[in-house]
Length: 386
Image (cartoon, helix red, strand yellow):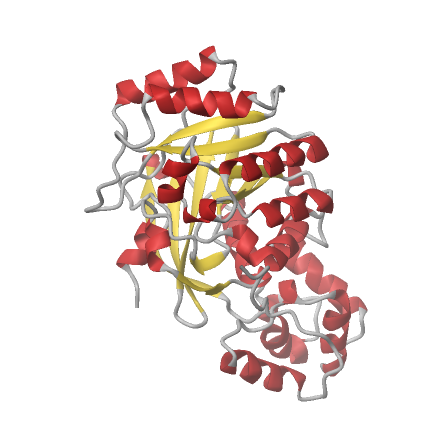
């Protein structure tokens, strides 16, 4: 498995026809247009210079994008009017456009289907709770992990997303919260989880660039604490170890879904490459390095992985490490239409949770959102494929 596919980040040293050549080159190679969020400081300064703008204008652009969440350069009154259209084209090409918006939970859950520059579809979900607002974002178009119960897995992997495409999901959600477009009035986007479409560790470079810009304070980023960012994985062990070495205090979430290798081989094909022992060893090492408890995501499926024997096996696996290092999130499965994989019985969910608690495992049954709006990741995109 490759570390990641092309991210759209290029180096400097371009000619005066920089933006025209670059946009054509990106289109030819299937890359998103190069956006302000994808550029290094040096690239931003170079591009500004090609427009005849001094380097201090780059900081103004950063203030607009990260501080004011604004990409409408035509309205940037602190820029010369004659340069605004060029600035818009050079720095803020449109990366994502809403195709369909669904609302649930009295307007506190908003799921958006986005169309990308090449016609691809991805999803994000904004969920407002009494004490926080969480955005679930996508990092790939589709997913190559092949988990049979997952709608995104059935789509397969089309391509990786650029850091700009990832960050635009965050910026738009932050605007929605700020401007009171989510039920409950104006507020602030507080949490970001990489649990939408795709395997974040399969697009490591762009995901890490996005994490750094989400968590940096304006004008370098959106100012959402790294401690309120969660990066999930189905078990790409090298990615976990690489993330631990970054020293960024994001929370790690492991999509485990099974307590033994025979069952997990069926539910999560990545297990055939990195088994449960290898995965939990890496996750525990992440806990030791970050001092942050790891989230264990466990989708409960009726008669498949939700029986008492599975709960006891899971507890034994996690307690092997001896310290309070995980928080388990049993999740009632949001089933794909027509799939054999379906949600557990409520009494089985309760018993599963009780067994974990009696074993000393911290566990919380996940609050399900959006079950009436194609809530499972990938359902909306699957229905609206081009």
